[in-house]
Image 1 (cartoon, one colour):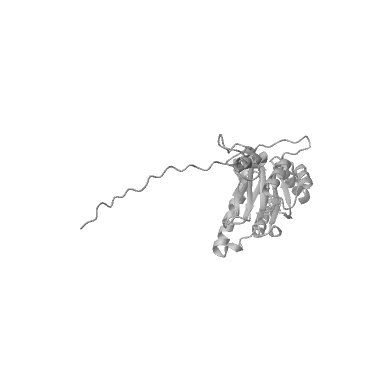
Image 2 (cartoon, rainbow, N blue to C red):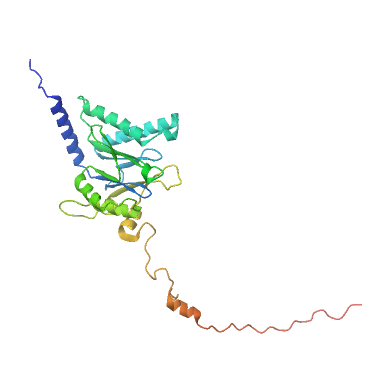
Length: 284
């Protein structure tokens, strides 16, 4: 009768942790960054169908790296939990902290269980508040540990180099356009050199506290990303100095004001004929 190999609990946990970390490092990084009006999630994701960032509830969003089927199961479970709690009690009872605790219990149980492999995922759970100080960002690792993040955080891929770039260029209270440019530049930064990530390969979503709707989650379209990253700001497309002027119309400026101040001949009114008397002879 053969005896099974003995593996110490410390070695077993170390092997499971190394296995999970290697799987997570193979994916592309996801950055979460606070800006003046909310929380932004930025990731390099060429796929238009498989999202790394999703909505969980009114003010809560979810982002993940690692195996898609595993973190998609976690996302669906979070949506169901939030819907059930909001329906049974009140929508205000659904909080990012409660969801983070639920995810931590699930991930910790799976990691410590010897019957299945650990999940190769790391996730962000973020909740936007009425002010910047009320925002909540939680980072959960493969073994169920929870960390409360502030200002910005990065997970997956080359997280160390991206975090170092954000630490140097992050500005508290920046606008959406400025925060997006910093995040995209950080995702393209590496020790071997910087690269430009096209807007078509980006997945960007925000939790915007200024939205009048109850749901604060919103995805940024490729067209809007191109406008922001192209330098035209967060508004409409740029217009040239005379692009909107019809042909022959005077441009604004001193020349236009000089033309308007020049004397203009008064209009000549047409001659008016005298009225015709149509009363006729008086009646008897």
